[in-house]
Length: 618
Image (cartoon, rainbow, N blue to C red):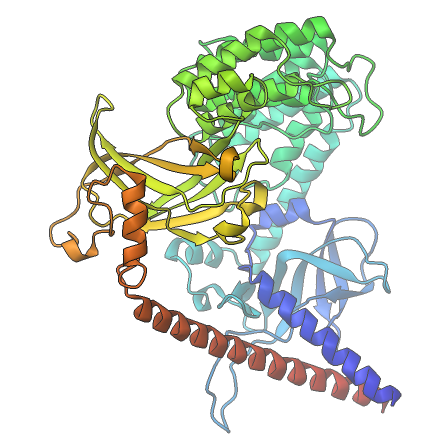
């Protein structure tokens, strides 16, 4: 009975492991030798020792690290000695898979694990030398699938990539790793300089000498093979840890230059700008229109983490919270950025303003000055439809009076409904509908309003249909509360929509009986491009009920008439039910197939492990 329980437990463990691996299904990355050198705690050259599990090796040279020495025998997890050669499928009875015999290995290792002093490799941190002097590197042929050790000519990758690896014979590769180890050790030694100013100067010199070898050069071009991996980030983080404000801002500027498109800058445990002098520098940089936009966004990003620094560890004495006077100066400066020409700067300023209007305990105190509220209202009124306007609406909805909110939006009781995540792809438009800042519930299906507008925003075409939801947490009759995960997913075809700019709105009601009120969502604007000849949809594919129906009542009547005939997809009810039944059957069959594959794989793996255990006992 005990053996049966052991086997059952083994099957369960193997099954869970296989399911986890199938869920991850991540492509196996191949890191460059230089990046492996940086990430590894220990680098050794070793020869295999004949053991049943193919995991023991004898060290013949130590390139990095001091915890082992020449002649030591070590255990390495994931040595991949059983996958030497490309996979072969459909072999005959007397055919054998072509395989290589490794005589020596180069291993990039992590520190010892607690269980028996074993080592584990850095991802892709294995290179093998075969008897015929071929260098094998790890490669994954399929995803998901095992990793195989193959020479460059067996890996179906780009020609330049093959050539790059083919040039590295075994001795050349070892020479390169030895040189990189010396450079990495030299860079790591810079962190030990005690004087922060001198240390920063040395780190800036190192960055200047090696920035052309970073994963992206100054022109944003991808660089493979010369990247220093995490060391490129560490050197910036060491500068930020010095808390020398001028040097830290210089590091932010240089990081932005070397990482085009980034608006966060280097990482830091505690913001070095979390003091009155640092915050003044950030505010001045964000307000300076002569500075590059990316630097202004970086300043706003760092402002958010510099207002109320969380004490994750012992911090320098000059790190201080914002007092009331400084808070007013910062908020008044930030509100002026809500009218900046760059949308990304406006968005960053809004989020910084959110954080600035808090208390030292992190509690949101709201936008408690009239100047801030008026600036938010003015920004909301001037902002074009989109994500930022939605965020501005959410900011003021809970701040202004309900009377002012109704005057601004036409919606009573502070109701705010926004259109988010709009996508126009492959002939369909999709978005999510969210209700913010209210506990009101919607009991009736809203209407989708489509308006084509000209350059002066004058409506030249109007269409209206019942909202075609593809996901709703509960039926409309039970009351939809569209906050958080309760959003409604909407999708409709763009067939019949003529070329031009369209304004999308959702109109509906909230509440019941005498408490029922009407609301209108925030707008969303999208473009219908010119259709290529031969791709124009026929009139039958035009969404039903969209032929210029301005009245919602008329649209609802047409919806009732079309329920048994044609839906928004242009299919009859019987056709839809048949299609859904067919799709459910296909999904069911595929699910059963994958389940059976998982069971067979689990049983095979379990049987192999049981046989291995019995063999060892004998």
